[in-house]
Length: 236
Picture 1 (cartoon, rainbow, N blue to C red):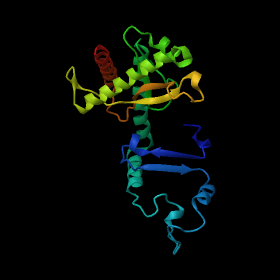
Picture 2 (cartoon, rainbow, N blue to C red):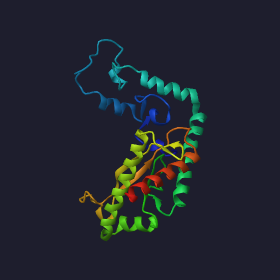
Picture 3 (spheres, helix red, strand yellow):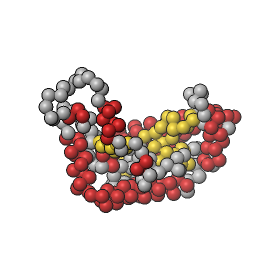
Picture 4 (cartoon, rainbow, N blue to C red):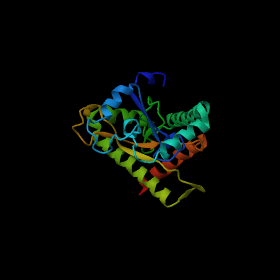
């Protein structure tokens, strides 16, 4: 974040980690004169200048309600800078705890270990597979494309199975299944850098903790449920 000052503009969605309604977003730009010159389109096709109050010059919402922006602002003021830092830091700690759990699972691998954001993307393989070795082959060697496609299908099936369990309120060992999603195109394989092969892409399960109620215990439970979904799919 210390390099943020070099950006021309930045957007913040308070509905993700700011505990505010979905429409609560913030857009900040460095050069006001440059941005406002772009924002003004010459003619007044929508709103007209009739008095000193001209919101189309300084508000993206123009005549719409500012309730979303105010909700984000109120949340930020309520928690304060240190409060927001503590909350975001706690979520990041939980995410990195999941990284450690994945590193200890021989049949799983985190595929975005260098990502400093909140999302963890990972793949699961059949029992007995060395996920780290297998994934590197699928990622870098065209001869393993068939394996890549097979395990992409497994990843998608696990994601769909978990979603079905969430909708069914299924209990595993007496506890509900956590909700998670998956990506059907996290990245291209190394031998498909230009993206001409629509199949040679990496699927991944997606963990996105978004509140302080997500604990290390829930991360353990998440992987337990992923294993359960994988095992049920492969036994059928």
